[in-house]
Length: 133
Figure 1 (spheres, rainbow, N blue to C red):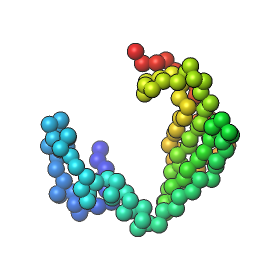
Figure 2: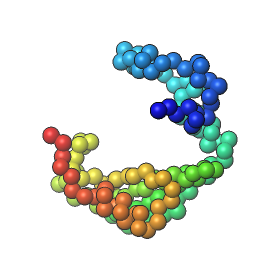
Figure 3: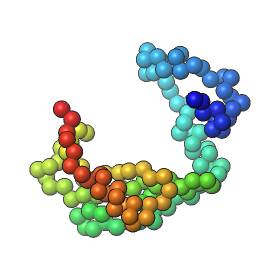
Figure 4: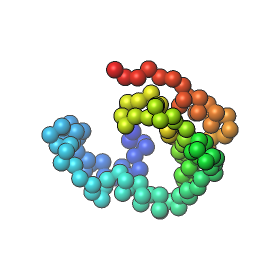
């Protein structure tokens, strides 16, 4: 399976190096941003296509509990970042990435979530999990 049909710049395919060359561990630390880097390409595309950004949901209380939705609206698709804030007791706080509870959780959503989507996302993000050992 290839992504050739989805490639926005098929004319540059002949100049790309094979993943076997580029993804060698010895080379990966030497990678530096270039004019072809993903972030630069994405920002140019966002500007050229006139993407719009907004925050249609902002529901937080004084303790930092609540939710927010940030949207990136493009010409063909909309992507949303859904953020949930939780009032985490001090005894549950940890400076470790691998924890059992967080004061903020996030999910990426393809489209614009409605109230039901937000409820489902919240439930999935706050279910108890088994910590990694």
